[in-house]
Structures are given as structure tokens and as C-alpha cells.
Length: 153
Image 1: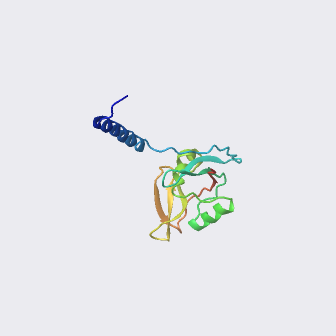
Image 2: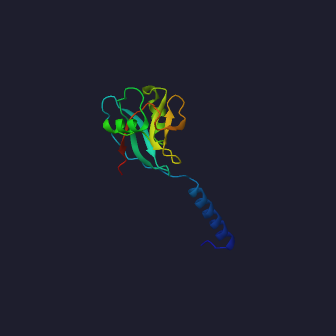
Image 3: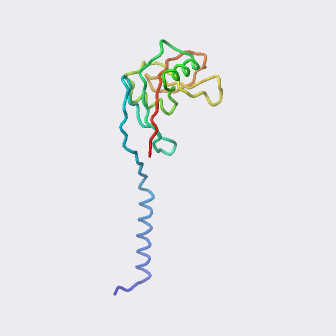
């Protein structure tokens, strides 16, 4: 039989504390359910969108229609809805830029988001450089539409 001593208890407690610390620092596991996504003709898969905590929320699909020329922000929003999608959000635009750049004009494209400090402005992404800035809503820019496929658990 093993004799229990204060030293052996301290050693086990230290070992346990190290195991707990290693577990806490090991990161997290994100489970992404398998998905078979049927793309319609001309659609492009833009990527997997994440929430603020890094959990997947939806798959993003770039729709093929493009408006004729540039549109002001309201007309771009209406156009996107008319083709069955929406303008991408600021969080979605980098996915579109990263994964579908070859299918985009290398110019300014509207996002669906108005500027939080001045409602007369909206955000855009320049699809040549990937930078996001804001522009007066009456200005004209290009537009693309996206649709999303929610992640089902």
C-alpha cells in the first residue's frame, strides 16, 4: 500500500492545476455541420460567415446578375432584393472579395449597411483593394447581390 504524504498530495495538486491550465489554453472546437450546397447556374460560393464569437452562421453565395452600370445606394438595395438576394454586409464583403474577386469589377461596390454615425452615408468595399470606406448614399457605385444559406445544427 502506498503511503499518502503531504508532498504527494501537493505534487498531484500541482499536476492537476497544470492539466486544467493546459485545457483552458487549448482553444475551442467549432463544429460545422456537413452541407451539400446546390449552386444555381452562375452562382459562386463565397464562404462561411462567422458571428462575433467565431461560430459559423451561414454560407454565402454570390448571385450572378449584375445591374447595368452604377446605382445609388437605395437603387442598389432595391435591385438586390429584386434579384432574390441582398447587398452583402460589411462582414460578408471580405468573403466575396477573397473568394470571388475574379468575378467582380475591381471597383467600389455598395454594402447593405448605412454608416452608424450618419445615415446619409453607407459603407462600400473597393473590390480591387479590399478596403472598406463610406460614401454618400446619393453617390453611384456598383452592386452585387448575395444569398445566404443558414447553418443548420
